[in-house]
Image 1 (tube, rainbow, N blue to C red):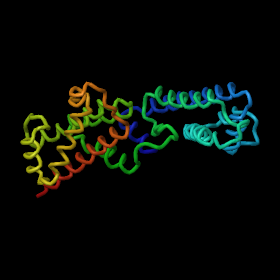
Image 2 (image 1 turned 120 degrees about the horizontal axis):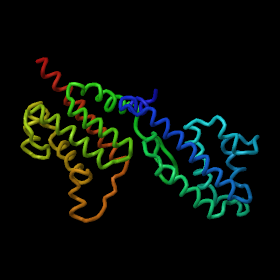
Image 3 (image 1 turned 180 degrees about the horizontal axis):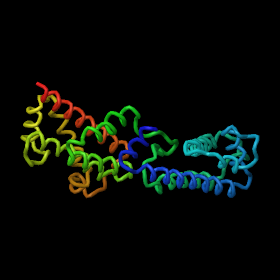
Image 4 (image 1 turned 90 degrees about the horizontal axis):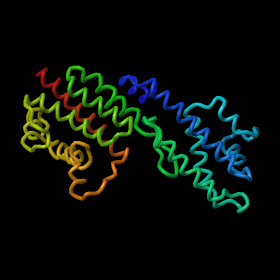
Length: 272
């Protein structure tokens, strides 16, 4: 089971990810059919079949018979590659602008309509994998297990993961921040907010991690600028700041790193 599937299994969302993958594949099929039908010279079909290594067939239907989700991701990358190489071809073999526009808008729409993170990001000229298997295992999956003894912290961290996977990045940051804030409250046995220098300093002193002061403050600053709970920067400038999937993922991993460090430190301190 992939690390992403393990996360969804922990969240109880495994059936939903399979449903989203099926919808994703159906959208890819529809896009490819639209491209084929609108390309009167059949340049799209010819080049796609050659690039995909199935040139002995004369129909796109062959691609759809036993295509897995990963196959359809590969098909989209083939299409993006074909577009990138278009201007280098003789004029009679180039796609017309309408086909190129349909490709780009079609792929963008496919990802926008996908409600869950399926493990890939569309970056304009190519599609790449999101997440990192080792980080998912250590900082997400393991933490969901370790936090059983801290139900409020686990609840916030679990919500942060869920919001990230459903591409609601502002609420992802909000709940990631709240997860760390709650574990600090547990350590200090108080109900003060995290973004307070005295609270941060007291917490770091309690667990002997004074050198992490600036890092914790930066963690708070990111939440202040982007989360749905804070968002101070948006209020100051009255403009919408773009919170990218990469930043949300980084913040979630950073939260997981803190939680892993804190829980392990607490355990070590209890032994001594």
